[in-house]
Length: 279
Image 1 (cartoon, rainbow, N blue to C red):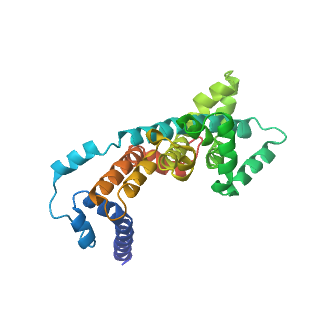
Image 2 (cartoon, rainbow, N blue to C red):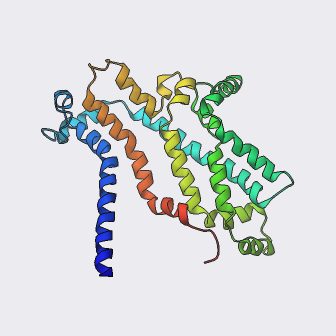
Image 3 (cartoon, rainbow, N blue to C red):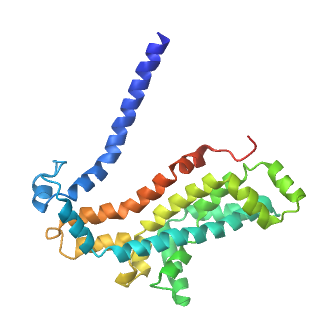
């Protein structure tokens, strides 16, 4: 009886999971299928999921003429390079907070954490003025520098660092390792899942960032992927655009994010539950 109950419970659980997975997956599936549809199909039969035909040749030709390469490259530069530099800065800062505790370490942490409650729009004006004084407006360098302060990364890495076993740190000190070697050979390997989690979340945020880049980037050749997508909506008006190309551009835009997540899905998931310490 107990096994029968467990079997029914398992079926119900998987059915609910499949239902919610389908709800989240449907918009993406509709977008991908929209790549193969014509404008008439999209407007006249919006409820129809499958297109009338799968014209792969037309899709390939359209993808080669979109002119999306520059936007994708800019987003990759900001997303990957900006995230790596941000992680380096945040890692040193968090290491000092956790393993080089001073009299005001906790005060500094709570001051930094309190800034997380500020709306991002509040920081636009001062950030704009600072970048203008540094002559970094309308540059990808300025955009990456403005994204270096990441309070969430500090909070997440601090929680992970605090779970690092003291035995490892003491062994490193006995062997004569300084702070840099301890960070590189002990702290980083024990917290690699946390680092990958922060990397993925930050990469997605910077890759898809729209509001702040739209304010400080004015040259079209420096636009990110989100601003590039906007060009499809404003160049011909809402009723004159080619919706299949919009769907194609949107599909191309999300592919890098999906690939990054799938390549490190194991580390991303374990970063939420894994404890750093002696097993």
